[in-house]
Length: 178
Image (cartoon, rainbow, N blue to C red; front, side, top):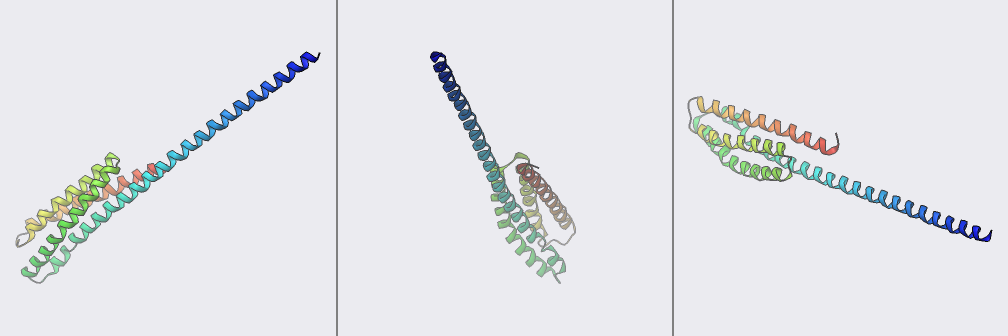
């Protein structure tokens, strides 16, 4: 009888050790899973924040470009050809640096992606670059053809910019989880 009590004690001890081991492993796995989940969530948050910052910079550059092009209203209101050409020359001198800043912002968007937002940023950049020589063609132009071309190119730029904003917003919503 004493022997069976010893066996029951040994069996109880092994059962307790086994249960403790299984519980420790389960707790360890749960902690590891939680750590992985936290790490992934943090990485996604950092990616979203980086993208948001990059997209905002691109939008800021597109807006700065637009501010230059909006001065066409001042050109239209100018009293004579000399004043118009002076204002157009000033616009042309300012549009180059605005496009340069947009080039840098586009490269940043390419790094942060995703691909469809990168392509949209590139389209904005290309449309801005298309406006630049058309602005120069307005200097000294008397006929309405160059102005029509300039206006059409600006509208294409604006449409590309609006498309970029929509894609950027959707990319950030996906990163936010909906």
